[in-house]
Image 1 (cartoon, rainbow, N blue to C red):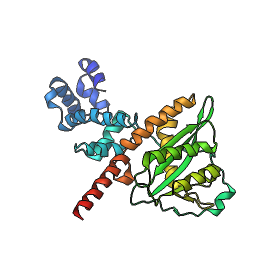
Image 2 (image 1 turned 90 degrees about the horizontal axis):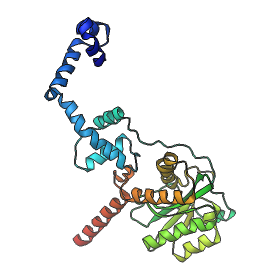
Image 3 (image 1 turned 135 degrees about the vertical axis):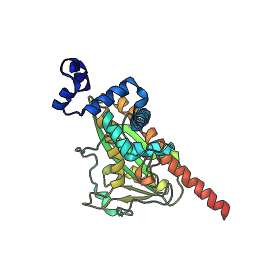
Image 4 (image 1 turned 120 degrees about the horizontal axis):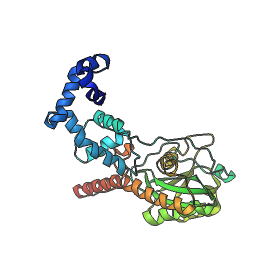
Amino acid sequence: MVRFIDDHRDTYGARPICAVLPIAPSTYYEHCARRNNPGRVAARAKRDAELMPEVRRVWNQSNGGCYGVVKVWHARSRERIRVARCTVERLMRKSGLKGVRRGPAFKVTTEPHDAAKTRPDLVERQFVADRPNQLWVADLTYVATWSGFVYVAFVIDVFSRRIVGWRVSNSLRSDLALDALEQALHARQPVEGLVHHSDRGVQYVSIRYSQRLTEAGIEPSVGSVGDSYDNALAETIIGLFKTEVIRRMGPWRTLDQVEYAVLEWVHWFNTKRLLGPLGFMPPAEYEKLHEQRQQAQAMVA
């Protein structure tokens, strides 16, 4: 609009053109003055020019653009840079930056097994823990690739939401879930008092999986029948994975491509992703803070 006035003001005059267009003459003249003298730029515009690159940087560092307004705002606050949430929202909207949104899942990856009927539900939808290695949840999901379906298994520590075990396979055999469990056991070396919760899928109630839990001194738990929230926390993490990686970065060609993407995402999720239930901290930082508090309490005692 300003350029149009510039192009025709010598012929018709600026004020007559402004009388027809939805722009005040004072606005046009102020724009011209700022163009000729950058020092007249408003303080808000100067602040926006300083903040915009930083907002875009934080957004880009969120695994290539996963964060929405809230997490970008919290990330800036963690860097000791004070900025209003509405300002972040305005700048992101102006730049077309958006966080990813979750979508529905369709394919069934676990089927109930009769052996699950004899196992108790020790969690009863209360996905809370007071310390690491107190409660783990496990679940499976799928990824459609050009070479067929690929399946991903996760084991998650409820205390910090940290992914402690994962595996990728082109088969839903019980070894997939078992391999993820073995990784979790190796990484965490849990002591007594750990509960392992899953749905009633055959992969998690198989004889081999059950024996491994017993050998490790882990108490098994399975979700209740007909309860859509029986493994809600694991499904939430898987939902984030599908949203932030699978649906956003496809199409997927091979198992190796998916496996590498899972490796990168798990590392980012555990060490850098801000989680609201943790006070907008990454899981690794949340566990480290818990450890420091325990050490401080031990020294006082």
